Length: 416
Ligand SMILES: [Zn+2]
Ligand SMILES: [Zn+2]
Image 1 (cartoon, rainbow, N blue to C red):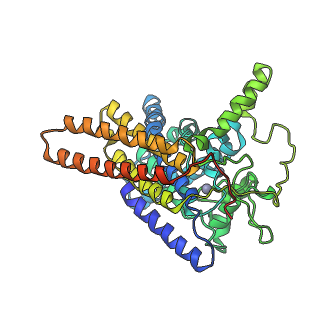
Image 2: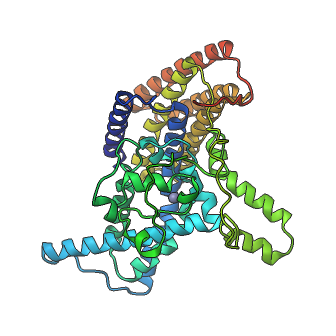
Image 3: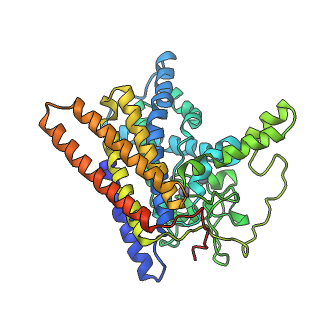
């Protein structure tokens, strides 16, 4: 699946960039786009582990309660109707899970990462949370209880998330009647904006009708420039900061709150507070879009590491089910460390280049170890030698970069 979807997504991003350039826009902000890809990759790994538990629980519930599953050996037109019904049921559940993710602090702490980019293009769609998988499945339990077969539940969930890729763009304007029924780039731009009229609006996945039915719809306004992002900005490219910064805030607020009742309430309160006070008006003139200058030499290195990380990720997704638990976890941890290293280099943290050197050396030791274990097989030896040569090349490259780069603590410069 990954091997098929990734090239399509990449091609769409290339086309979008070409259209942007043609229309006089500057193209992608590379650190931002690479951060989105990094966060998306890590979320795929976290999701794979979470699904074993959550999807497993739904299937277990169906077995335990002896739920009669929808029939699948029926005429094609009846089957098509059932598939459509499953998709509508899933999208309806998605509306609610997405709405809760914006309106309950502990869920927002996880979902906010999808909204943390202050740019809006196809790469933004890749930016997904690594921490949300364990809670959201409860909303899909009614589908399991209604007897939707597991294969249908999994397929419509995949279709719903794939659909949402194309709506992350500024290059498609308004789409006439489609705006009334479907989630479109226009109404999803509103969802990603922090302008006052956009807060907590347009939660739909495929259909926007749920927002129209439940009073959360807002139409894009021509006369107001959209400002993307969240009110408590991350201002970091590090995936750990991205995923955890609102949890950190929650823990801090909990420590400062007195009384257990109020401490617990805090986690379930809306991010804007319990009372119906209006959201603070956005200071549009004072908005300072996060960005940081990175030398083109360093950016080239980071892009190469990002490509290598997606190859590792694709390989992990392909083989992980057949690996022993320690190897499976170790390989996933190696990808996580790569993601952290990429984020730190984008961030320009003082320790980032040293961390990258240590990462490459640790990978070399791990590959040598795995190579010894795989001796006897010619393919294992050849691939070990090739990977080792690649790692040595990267090590030489980063050591040269260390000599020429002067890294500083996040020296922030406006991206404009
Ligand atoms: Zn959202
Ligand atoms: Zn989105």
